[in-house]
Image (tube, rainbow, N blue to C red; front, side, top):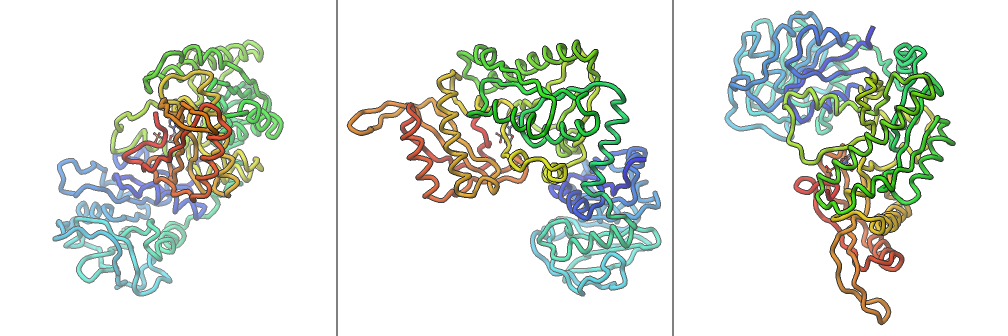
Amino acid sequence: MTTPSIVILDFGSQYTQLIARRIREQNVFSAVLPCTASIAEIEAQNPIGIVLSGGPCSVYDADAPPADPAVLDLGLPVLGICYGLQFITHHLGGRVRSAEKREYGHAEVEIVDAHNALFAELPASLHVWMSHGDEALDLPPGFHLTAKTSSAVAGIASPERRIWAVQFHPEVHHTKQGTALLRNFLFNICNAQPDWTPEHFIQSTIAAIREKVGDGHAICALSGGVDSSVAAVLVHRAIGDRLTCVFVDNGVLRKNEFAKVQQNLRDKLGLKLVAVDASKRFLSRLAGITDPEAKRKIIGNEFIAVFDDEAHRIAAETGGVDFLVQGTLYPDVIESSSVKGPSQTIKSHHNVGGLPETMKLKLIEPLRDLFKDEVRRIGRDLQMPADILQRQPFPGPGLAVRILGEITAERVALLQEADDIVVTEIRNAGLYEKIWQSFAVLLPVKSVGVMGDQRTYAYTCAIRAVHSEDGMTADWVPLPYDVLKTISSRIVNEVRGINRVVYDITSKPPGTIEWE
Ligand code: XMP
C-alpha cells in the first residue's frame, strides 16, 4: 500500500509547493495533483485528507480550473485555502462575489468559533497573510462562520461534512500561527501519523527498489551533484554492485573535477564507477560553434551517444542491463502535470541520464517524491560527505554555458582557473553554503590593460553570485567588497589571459542565472 498522504489539489497558486513542504515538515507525506485529477487518481494516493490550494482565477471565470466537486463528497477531511474556500462555497450552494478591492498582504483575523478543531489552542486573533480578489458572501447550507476580518469572511466550516476552509494562507510564514493551524488539520482532524521520516523513506525506498529490480542490473549517469549521487547511493544500498555508475568528462568540467568526483563516488561512497574521458570528442564537436542553443544541443546529444556506448558495453559485461536510475525531483514531476501547462522554452536543459533509447530501459527515480532540501536531508541520513550534499548546482552543459562565443581548450582552461579562484575565495569567506550559485563567466571581449610597464590586451571575466530557492527566480548577491577585491586581484594576477573583472548585478528575471 502506498504511504498515507494528504493530497493537495493545485488550482495554480504560487504557494502550492509551499503547502506540500509545510505538511512534509510535520513528517506527513503530501502529494500535489493538478486540480483536474480524477477521483480515481486522487484515491490512488491513499489520501487521509485533501487540501484545496489557492489559485489566480475566480470561480466565475470561463477558464476557472475544472475540478470535480465530487472530491468534497469522499468523506475525507477537506481543508480549503483561499480559492479553495471559494470553490467550496460556490459548489455547495453558497455565493462568492468579487471584492471591492483586492486584499493583499498582512491582515488581522478574529476567530469567532473557538471550539473549531482547526483553531484548537490558537489565540483569539490571528495575524495572517491574505491574497485574494473574490470573497464568500453567503455560506453554503450547513456551514457556519469560524473567522472573520473587519470586513470579510476569513473562515468557514461544516464539521458534519468534515470540511474546513480559510481565506488566508496558513502555509506562508507571514501567517504567524500557520503551522499550528496546519498541525491541527493533520493531527486533530485527519489523524495523521508523523511517521514519514528520513529513516522511513530510506527503508521503504530501498525495499521498493529491491522488489522492482529483482536480480536485474541498473546503470546510472552521475555528475557528482547532489541529486544523482543520492539517487545512486539509495540504489546501491538496495542492489549493491548490480548498479554501475557512469561519469563522463565532457571537456567542460571544472578544475580537477574529473579526479575529485571519482574520488568522492568511488572511494568515499563505494560506488561501482566507470569514468569516461570523452573530453576530446566533445571539444571537437563544439569547435567553431557560438550559438548558445546549438552548444547545448551538441553537448546533450553527445552525452547521450557516449552514455549509450557505455551502457551497451556494461550490458555485454553483466549479461544485460534492465534499469536506468535518474535523480528526477518532485518539482519536475509537478511541473510536467501542472494546470498551468507547459511554459515557454528559455533554454533546452540537459540533465545527466539521457535515456539510451534502443535499450528500452525501465526507469528508477527514487527521489521523484522529494524536494531538494529533502534530498539533502536523506543524504545526511545516508552519511554522505558534506561536500557532495552542500555542492552548489552545476549545469549539465558545464562551463560551456559560461564561455560566451566559441569553446576552445584554451578558453576552458582560462575559465577553470578563474572559476577555481571564485569558488575558493567564496569558501574562504564562509559564504559558499549561503549562496545558491557563485561562479565566473568568460566573455569574448578583449580590452586593454597595463601590468607592470606592459600593455595587455586580454579577455574579460564576469563574476556571478545569486541567492535562489529553486533556480526559478534569483537575486544577485551583494558580495562584500573585500571578497570581490580579492577575487578580482587574484584572477588578474594569476590567470594569464584575463585582465579585467566585472560583477554581474542582474537578478532573474529579467536575467537568467547562467549566461547562455
Ligand atoms: P538559468 O540559467 O535558466 O538556470 O536561470 C537555472 C538553474 O538551472 C541550472 N541549469 C541547468 N541545470 N542542466 C542542468 O542540470 C542544464 O542544462 C542547465 N541549464 C541551467 C543553472 O545552473 C541554475 O541553477
